[in-house]
Amino acid sequence: TKADAFITSSEDIYLNSGEVDHVAPPAAHIMCEGLNRLFLAGIPGEPNTIWFSLLRSADQPVNFNDALKLILPDNGGEITALAIVGEALIAFKRRAIYRIRGSGPSNTLSEGTFFDAELISTDVGSTGQRSGVVCHLGAMFQSDKGFYLVEPSGAIRYMSAPLEGLIGSQAPSSLINGGVLLPVDQQIRFTSA
Image (cartoon, rainbow, N blue to C red; front, side):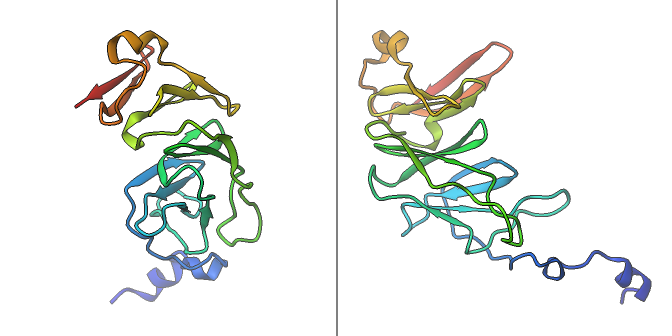
């Protein structure tokens, strides 16, 4: 058994601080880290839902609560990718892109919030999480219409013009299976199947 001195000197459990209960999140195949949180999407049966963690602190695991969710409108298909661009969460669907700003609620839910999802594209979206790379310019991603960049302002820029001779203007969605940022070379490299 532990000595009484050890027990009384240990940290209080999170419930004594007013923090919400910790709940295991559902299985998800899309994850994104940023804004001092972990974001999850691609949840079976919840195609428009993003779970987000409590604010993370040093020496603590990532914790979730089932009240910490963002639900996007149905248009554009299901969520296909997430990225942090600037100080905003970008949620990609197959044919739409949303920007969610704000710092989110505190761990006690007593202050802070995310703003409503702002629709920034109604005809371009991402083919999947693997086709996106975040860099200092924003998030570059593959769509059914080619490669695009979401800038921190929320502007969407077509980036495929230099690639059209190599892959055609309508790149098949199965073409890209990964991407990586090479900051020293100032390059983004995509890999294909």
